Image (cartoon, rainbow, N blue to C red; front, side, top):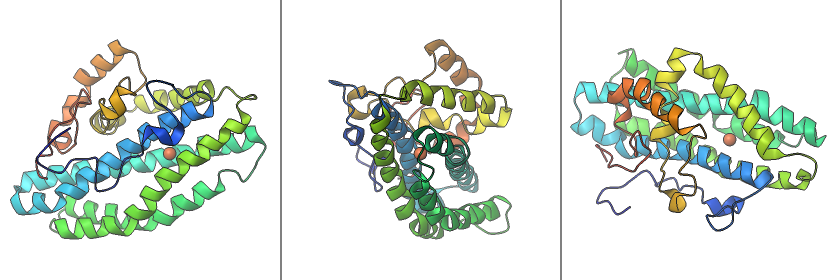
Amino acid sequence: MDLPKPWVDGPFGLIPASTSGDSTGKRAVGARACSSEMTVVHNTIIRGANAIYLQAVNVEKLGTPKDQSDFVYFALRWAERLHEHHNTEETMLFPAINEITKMPTLMDGNLEEHLAFQTGLEDFTGYLESVHEQITVYDGTKTRALMNNFMPALHGHLWNEIDTLNALEKWDEMVDWPVWFRDRVSARVSGLMKESRFRTELFPLAFILHDKTWENGLWSAFPPIPWGITIVLRWLFVRKKDDWWRFAGCDYDSMPKELPFA
Ligand SMILES: [Fe+2]
């Protein structure tokens, strides 16, 4: 996309599909199909971080108090979605992978990496909460500085985890990883979708932080839910918080759009 303003593909670089060996010409199979899907999810996290980082200062300089308040909500929901992602991995995915592979410490490196950015992320969310509660005023430079404290560790982790998942191809003969992965994720998402706050305040991020055009549309069908249900979800839940979602790099159809404050 050729836009005059910076966009959510930087400054923190997106993970290319080639990391898992996936391409439109030759789709990844086995464990690499899962690592490709995890790449898509991790890139939503990276696009969200970029949207916050790129707009943090201008929201303070050029935005109204309402813009600042909406932006803080957007950033907090991003952080909450990130926390939920890592919580699912720590409590469900990683222990199950250790068990299936009979390698009890296989995923420990990833858990250690989670810890490496935890404190910085908590400082970031704590600050945004204090702005939301009107204990302190919004400061874009401070927001960026707080991100600088944890983003290198988080960004590195999001890349490294893809390599760990690629290595699971060693067990491809033994496990149908794509079916296993999809079943686990579906069960988790179905549970979360029963909560109305998840449907309106967190799930929409799957649409607006994903770019359908990424890698020639390799993952244009994301999130992996039937087309009809996607339409219903968009109309019923995604639009409810329009004011927050305007800071994302893509629209409700996961198509790229300009960042209002970049
Ligand atoms: Fe992950």
